[in-house]
Each structure stands twice: as structure tokens, then as C-alpha cells.
Length: 166
Image 1 (cartoon, rainbow, N blue to C red):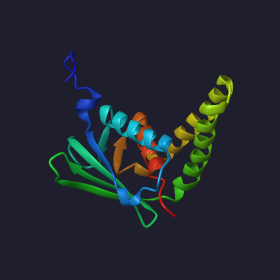
Image 2: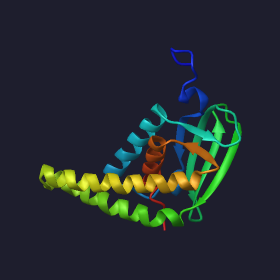
Image 3: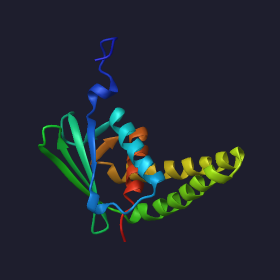
Image 4: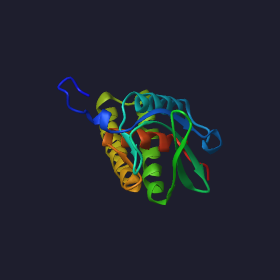
């Protein structure tokens, strides 16, 4: 409950308290991607709205993996009780992740060699592609897991960071 006695959004919704990435699903990453992955997990755990549809609000643990070109969300309670497993085709995300990867590589190169205005322009494009990927992810989770846009953005960063093999 908030200070005014009303239930806050965080109180009315579940929350992720841990995120695990399946090491078998993760391709080798550059130090920049490893850093993005660590920051995304930290940010996601710090602030998120994550509510599996049809389940009471709780503190959840999410394990993300890629199995046979499908994104797998395994959700348990903090106590380890199975809540749900959702399997999503990566096909709708494949192009946007590829585009995001290209622009991220440009951004990381620009940080080392470009002017501040060039870096800013690339970063604006990167944020736009990131928002597009986050929207697609929210649409794919619709009816399965309720998330807000900030949570979807952090989840998309993790999906990108998985850089699925193959």
C-alpha cells in the first residue's frame, strides 16, 4: 500500500526477484554485450512489473533460454514452485534483434571513434529499434505475462543479450 492508503501498481502486480539466463543458450558475447546483460538483469530486478496471467501476484524467478529456435520463459515462485512455462517463436523477433545488433555494433564503435553528435544520432536510432523490439515482445507476451513498457524494454535487452545460437 502506498502512503495514501491506496494499492500501488507494484503492490497489485507480481515482481521478478531473480532472472537466470540459460548458459547453454547463450552465444559468446563481447564485453559490451556482457555489460549490457548484467545491467539489464540488475535494472530488471530493481524495478519491474511482471505478472503471469491467471496467477496471484507474487515474487517470481524467471529463467530465460532458447530451445530449438524458441524463446522459453520458465517462471517459478521465489520458493521454487512452478508457475508457468511459455514458449515463444523467435521468428517475429529475429529481424529486429538482427537490426538491433547492427546498430549496437555501430554504437560501440562510435563510442570509441566518433564525435558526440554522431554518437547521439546513433543512440537515438538504437533507442528507436529497442522500443520497437520491446513492443513486439509485449505483443508476444500478451495473454501470457503482463508487463509494462519499462519491464518489456529490459526483457528485450536480455533477449538480445542471449544472442541465440544458430
